[in-house]
Length: 321
Ligand code: BTN
Image (cartoon, rainbow, N blue to C red; front, side, top):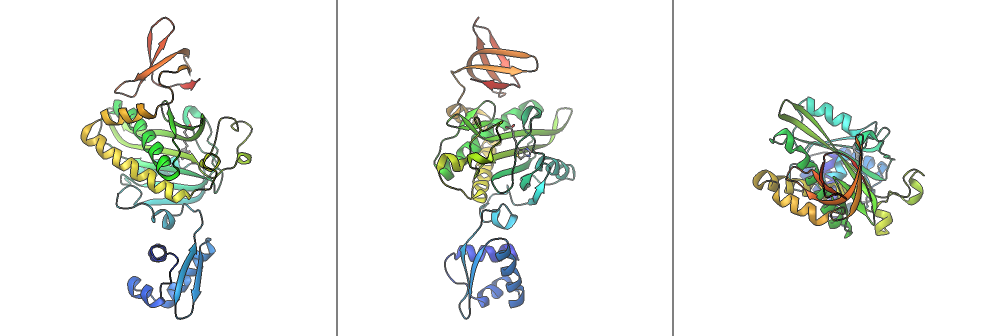
């Protein structure tokens, strides 16, 4: 009901919607309308109420609540089911649990803040309140296990496209799936699987994006390597609008991938790749290799040619320039 009311007010943003129109459309009493208007105001929506004219939405806050995000999720099925927590250890943990309980593909978990956000290679992911997108998406692709890395690359392309659509800023992809603006990391992706033998039960895609942080919000440790959309674009952005765009891009590419395979995704990934042709060092627990990044295979493996002309297949590593 609150969500439907917000939709009505947003569709008519800046104009009055009468109490009568609302109660006719949503089939509810004036008292119920008033209760939900008060709740929306308490969450930060500025709504004017004028006798005989009705209600008018003036401004809305930067929230990642289901009612706000649903304003931007459009026709697709990704993001239709949303679990939201103001503060949580990690959205990945909740999404894993939901996936085990049978949650549908496209279900997302959002948090305003994570107290134990997880990054790749066992690292922590700083996820302060009110500034970024901390989201986990449940996918259930019917593909063999060894193709799962392709999905990670697909997500990186989708996130890069969404950033460009909303902000006009190009975000390059550093293998496998870091998104960089002006050489600094703005978003990271963590793909975790629930699988058995060769079959995938679900893929839990964790997306972290720095949206409205200012430089002072980053710790010493990451200040030189991290950035946010607001820093790069010189303005704040609505997180819910970006979430809507990310989900829509993922869903589009996913359908294309399921129908036509990895070829198109690979081309899109390579067109946005930051590391290709560059001299890089791939560091992993088994050591480090320096050479030129030649490309990726159809499995999403990075090919690195060392100074002796030997080509190495890199499955998992940290890339340094
Ligand atoms: C990385 O670049 O290392 C990946 C970072 C992934 C962070 C996201 S935020 C939402 C989800 N929940 C987590 O704990 N991690 C992922």
